[in-house]
Image (cartoon, rainbow, N blue to C red; front, side, top):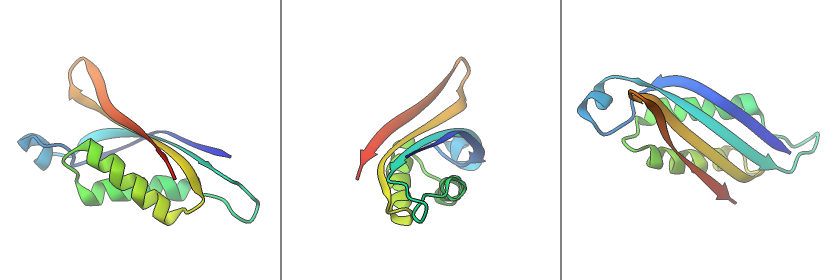
Length: 108
């Protein structure tokens, strides 16, 4: 089974510039989770989205690369059924003419 969470959008403190450390900015996160589904064992996508946002807001990461690594560990801890995970974090407002971000896939 594959869970898709696309364009999860919220504001958080993220970045290394002085202005990024004091002013929350918009991030957009995509998450794809593969796992073995059964009617008695499933991954709740609403909980996944909540954990992603809560972790990002609480941690106030400097690097989005570090955020990806931490999110992968956190999600696997909460949802041991996850077999593969792909995460994308975008900062849509950091540059005037494009959206930038990072993406990584994890195999557990």
